[in-house]
Length: 105
Image (cartoon, rainbow, N blue to C red; front, side, top):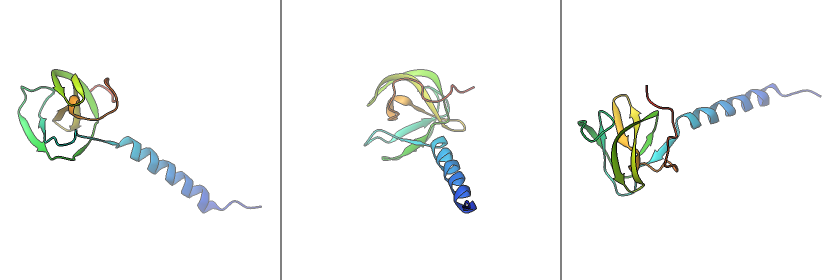
């Protein structure tokens, strides 16, 4: 009996793709919301852009900041979605009231 080498390689690539997809999972912004993206974790930071309705975001890290009330409750957690870009976790459907990513350094 022989092992088809391509099958073994394909499974390894599938695992790598699955791992990569999990690493860049995105989360939906609350329905009907155009969400302000700020330069830091709080409402006193300048708005750098506005996400359109139906947007999804990748969350790279999270940090505490201004407490905000939104569709998903009141939260002081701010999600880092890109370099120098933060959104309030109260507007992101993460499925959790707590931290889901590492703290930003």
